[in-house]
Image (cartoon, rainbow, N blue to C red):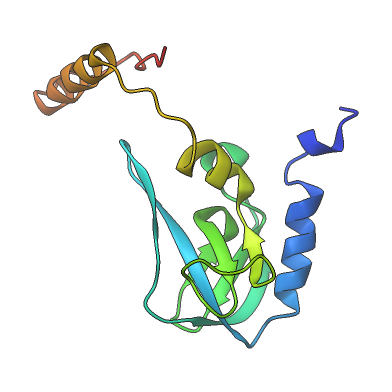
Length: 146
């Protein structure tokens, strides 16, 4: 691979992790990704969380969106950076560009704000697949988005 942008994680990711290391002990707004089989969204917490540490995650996996670092937060949880949409100082809602210290660009661009194509055929296929799963018929094919 000659293009450094094809490497995972990118150099921008590592730069953001180093910036986060400088903010250990400070309150930050962590916007987490909440995904299910049929949709993806984000959760805005009601209050900032104190970043206690950043530790190496022993089993990163780009296919399952598990990054090589884990955040340890003051609410007793460890959150993988692959499960974080954005981390900011000051405000969780509409922070300025200077206040954003981490952004999961791949998720934001390719999932959260990706263009959607909704058609009658796609709705019908999705409904049939969901109904089949509810009735116990395993789905062995993926729905094609045209």
